[in-house]
Image (tube, rainbow, N blue to C red; front, side):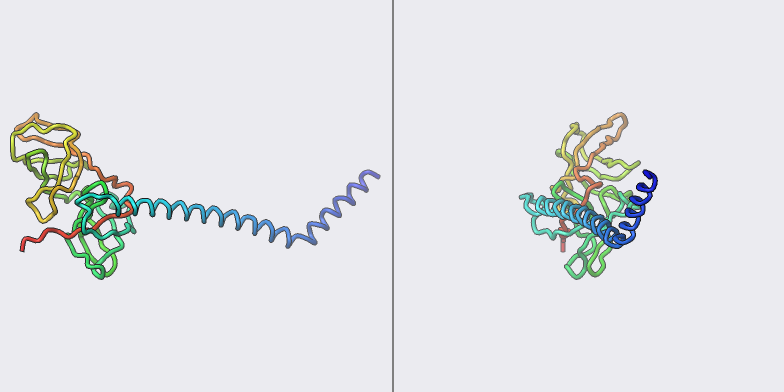
Length: 219
Protein backbone atom coordinates (compact mmCIF):
# COMPACT_ATOMS: atom_id res chain seq x y z
CA UNK A 1 0.00 0.00 0.00
CA UNK A 2 2.81 2.35 0.95
CA UNK A 3 4.59 1.48 -2.27
CA UNK A 4 1.47 2.33 -4.25
CA UNK A 5 1.19 5.72 -2.54
CA UNK A 6 4.85 6.34 -3.25
CA UNK A 7 4.42 5.48 -6.93
CA UNK A 8 1.38 7.77 -7.15
CA UNK A 9 3.27 10.70 -5.55
CA UNK A 10 6.21 10.12 -7.88
CA UNK A 11 3.83 10.00 -10.84
CA UNK A 12 2.26 13.33 -9.82
CA UNK A 13 5.71 14.90 -9.42
CA UNK A 14 6.79 13.69 -12.86
CA UNK A 15 3.50 14.87 -14.35
CA UNK A 16 3.92 18.26 -12.68
CA UNK A 17 7.46 18.59 -14.03
CA UNK A 18 6.31 17.57 -17.50
CA UNK A 19 3.42 20.05 -17.58
CA UNK A 20 5.40 22.95 -16.18
CA UNK A 21 8.79 22.09 -17.69
CA UNK A 22 8.73 25.04 -20.11
CA UNK A 23 7.85 27.45 -17.32
CA UNK A 24 10.56 26.10 -15.02
CA UNK A 25 13.11 26.07 -17.81
CA UNK A 26 12.24 29.65 -18.73
CA UNK A 27 12.46 30.72 -15.09
CA UNK A 28 15.88 29.14 -14.57
CA UNK A 29 17.25 30.55 -17.81
CA UNK A 30 15.91 33.98 -16.92
CA UNK A 31 17.43 33.72 -13.46
CA UNK A 32 20.82 32.73 -14.88
CA UNK A 33 20.57 35.49 -17.51
CA UNK A 34 19.75 38.11 -14.90
CA UNK A 35 22.62 36.93 -12.73
CA UNK A 36 25.01 36.97 -15.67
CA UNK A 37 23.71 40.37 -16.76
CA UNK A 38 24.23 41.69 -13.24
CA UNK A 39 27.81 40.40 -13.20
CA UNK A 40 28.52 41.90 -16.64
CA UNK A 41 27.03 45.26 -15.66
CA UNK A 42 29.04 45.28 -12.44
CA UNK A 43 32.24 44.48 -14.36
CA UNK A 44 31.45 47.21 -16.91
CA UNK A 45 30.81 49.66 -14.07
CA UNK A 46 34.09 48.79 -12.38
CA UNK A 47 35.99 49.11 -15.68
CA UNK A 48 34.40 52.46 -16.46
CA UNK A 49 35.08 53.65 -12.91
CA UNK A 50 38.76 52.73 -13.21
CA UNK A 51 39.03 54.41 -16.61
CA UNK A 52 37.30 57.54 -15.33
CA UNK A 53 39.58 57.76 -12.31
CA UNK A 54 42.63 57.21 -14.51
CA UNK A 55 41.47 59.95 -16.86
CA UNK A 56 40.94 62.36 -13.97
CA UNK A 57 44.34 61.52 -12.55
CA UNK A 58 45.99 62.17 -15.91
CA UNK A 59 44.01 65.28 -16.84
CA UNK A 60 43.88 67.29 -13.63
CA UNK A 61 47.37 67.06 -12.19
CA UNK A 62 49.15 70.39 -12.41
CA UNK A 63 52.45 69.11 -13.82
CA UNK A 64 54.39 71.24 -16.32
CA UNK A 65 55.21 68.32 -18.62
CA UNK A 66 51.48 67.61 -19.03
CA UNK A 67 50.73 71.09 -20.38
CA UNK A 68 49.36 71.46 -23.92
CA UNK A 69 48.88 67.74 -24.23
CA UNK A 70 46.17 65.64 -25.86
CA UNK A 71 44.69 62.83 -23.78
CA UNK A 72 44.36 59.44 -25.45
CA UNK A 73 43.23 56.02 -24.36
CA UNK A 74 45.55 53.05 -24.79
CA UNK A 75 43.67 50.59 -26.99
CA UNK A 76 46.24 47.83 -27.46
CA UNK A 77 49.07 46.52 -25.31
CA UNK A 78 50.15 43.44 -27.23
CA UNK A 79 51.70 40.79 -24.91
CA UNK A 80 54.11 39.77 -27.68
CA UNK A 81 55.68 43.24 -27.70
CA UNK A 82 54.59 44.24 -24.21
CA UNK A 83 57.63 46.35 -23.32
CA UNK A 84 58.23 47.59 -26.86
CA UNK A 85 55.08 49.37 -27.98
CA UNK A 86 51.43 50.27 -27.40
CA UNK A 87 48.65 51.54 -29.66
CA UNK A 88 46.70 54.68 -28.73
CA UNK A 89 43.36 56.01 -29.95
CA UNK A 90 44.63 59.18 -31.60
CA UNK A 91 46.13 59.59 -35.06
CA UNK A 92 46.71 61.83 -38.04
CA UNK A 93 43.12 63.08 -38.03
CA UNK A 94 43.66 64.40 -34.48
CA UNK A 95 46.89 66.19 -35.43
CA UNK A 96 49.31 63.52 -34.18
CA UNK A 97 52.71 63.24 -35.87
CA UNK A 98 55.62 60.82 -35.76
CA UNK A 99 58.14 61.59 -32.99
CA UNK A 100 55.51 63.28 -30.79
CA UNK A 101 56.19 62.62 -27.12
CA UNK A 102 54.05 60.40 -24.90
CA UNK A 103 53.85 60.98 -21.14
CA UNK A 104 51.48 60.23 -18.29
CA UNK A 105 51.11 61.56 -14.75
CA UNK A 106 54.30 59.73 -13.70
CA UNK A 107 56.58 60.89 -16.49
CA UNK A 108 58.06 59.84 -19.83
CA UNK A 109 56.31 56.93 -21.59
CA UNK A 110 57.73 56.96 -25.11
CA UNK A 111 57.28 58.56 -28.52
CA UNK A 112 55.10 58.12 -31.59
CA UNK A 113 56.51 55.61 -34.03
CA UNK A 114 53.75 55.18 -36.64
CA UNK A 115 50.67 57.32 -37.30
CA UNK A 116 47.45 56.13 -38.97
CA UNK A 117 44.10 57.86 -39.39
CA UNK A 118 42.79 57.57 -35.84
CA UNK A 119 45.40 55.42 -34.11
CA UNK A 120 49.15 55.55 -33.53
CA UNK A 121 51.86 53.16 -32.41
CA UNK A 122 54.04 54.29 -29.53
CA UNK A 123 57.61 53.12 -29.04
CA UNK A 124 57.96 52.76 -25.28
CA UNK A 125 60.84 53.91 -23.08
CA UNK A 126 61.49 50.23 -22.34
CA UNK A 127 61.89 49.41 -26.05
CA UNK A 128 65.22 47.74 -26.81
CA UNK A 129 65.93 50.41 -29.46
CA UNK A 130 65.66 53.33 -27.01
CA UNK A 131 68.45 55.90 -27.07
CA UNK A 132 67.67 58.97 -24.99
CA UNK A 133 69.70 61.95 -23.77
CA UNK A 134 69.08 62.41 -20.04
CA UNK A 135 70.09 64.64 -17.16
CA UNK A 136 71.08 63.38 -13.69
CA UNK A 137 71.96 66.04 -11.11
CA UNK A 138 74.37 68.28 -13.06
CA UNK A 139 75.49 65.56 -15.42
CA UNK A 140 74.25 64.34 -18.78
CA UNK A 141 74.32 60.89 -20.29
CA UNK A 142 72.75 58.50 -22.76
CA UNK A 143 70.01 56.12 -21.58
CA UNK A 144 69.61 52.77 -23.33
CA UNK A 145 67.97 49.43 -22.59
CA UNK A 146 70.37 46.62 -21.75
CA UNK A 147 69.16 43.21 -20.58
CA UNK A 148 65.70 44.68 -19.91
CA UNK A 149 67.16 47.39 -17.67
CA UNK A 150 67.38 51.14 -18.19
CA UNK A 151 71.11 51.97 -18.19
CA UNK A 152 72.75 55.40 -18.43
CA UNK A 153 76.30 55.59 -19.78
CA UNK A 154 78.58 58.23 -21.29
CA UNK A 155 78.24 60.49 -18.24
CA UNK A 156 79.67 63.94 -19.05
CA UNK A 157 81.13 64.74 -15.64
CA UNK A 158 82.97 63.04 -12.81
CA UNK A 159 80.49 64.09 -10.12
CA UNK A 160 79.28 61.39 -7.77
CA UNK A 161 75.78 60.30 -8.74
CA UNK A 162 73.58 59.54 -5.75
CA UNK A 163 71.03 56.73 -5.54
CA UNK A 164 67.36 57.82 -5.56
CA UNK A 165 68.26 60.84 -7.71
CA UNK A 166 65.62 61.62 -10.32
CA UNK A 167 66.58 61.19 -13.97
CA UNK A 168 65.05 63.68 -16.45
CA UNK A 169 64.97 64.17 -20.19
CA UNK A 170 67.65 66.64 -21.27
CA UNK A 171 67.56 69.72 -23.49
CA UNK A 172 69.96 68.24 -26.07
CA UNK A 173 67.31 66.58 -28.24
CA UNK A 174 63.90 67.43 -29.67
CA UNK A 175 62.25 65.95 -26.58
CA UNK A 176 61.01 68.56 -24.08
CA UNK A 177 63.38 68.79 -21.12
CA UNK A 178 62.69 68.11 -17.45
CA UNK A 179 60.26 65.23 -18.03
CA UNK A 180 60.81 62.71 -15.21
CA UNK A 181 62.01 59.31 -16.37
CA UNK A 182 62.85 57.42 -13.20
CA UNK A 183 65.18 57.23 -10.24
CA UNK A 184 68.73 55.95 -9.84
CA UNK A 185 68.68 52.61 -8.05
CA UNK A 186 72.31 51.59 -8.52
CA UNK A 187 75.61 53.25 -9.43
CA UNK A 188 78.40 51.05 -10.72
CA UNK A 189 81.74 52.87 -10.64
CA UNK A 190 83.90 49.76 -10.74
CA UNK A 191 85.24 50.60 -14.21
CA UNK A 192 86.46 53.80 -15.86
CA UNK A 193 82.94 54.50 -17.06
CA UNK A 194 80.08 54.98 -14.63
CA UNK A 195 77.08 52.74 -15.20
CA UNK A 196 73.78 54.03 -13.82
CA UNK A 197 70.80 51.71 -13.42
CA UNK A 198 67.45 53.49 -13.51
CA UNK A 199 64.01 52.36 -12.34
CA UNK A 200 61.24 54.01 -14.42
CA UNK A 201 58.49 55.96 -12.69
CA UNK A 202 55.88 54.83 -15.22
CA UNK A 203 54.15 51.53 -14.52
CA UNK A 204 54.29 49.94 -17.98
CA UNK A 205 52.12 47.06 -16.79
CA UNK A 206 49.22 49.43 -16.21
CA UNK A 207 48.90 52.01 -19.00
CA UNK A 208 45.32 53.15 -19.55
CA UNK A 209 45.52 56.80 -20.58
CA UNK A 210 48.45 58.87 -21.84
CA UNK A 211 49.23 62.43 -22.89
CA UNK A 212 50.58 63.32 -26.32
CA UNK A 213 52.95 66.27 -26.56
CA UNK A 214 54.64 67.77 -29.60
CA UNK A 215 58.36 67.28 -29.99
CA UNK A 216 60.49 70.42 -29.79
CA UNK A 217 61.17 72.11 -33.14
CA UNK A 218 64.45 73.96 -33.69
CA UNK A 219 63.51 75.37 -37.10
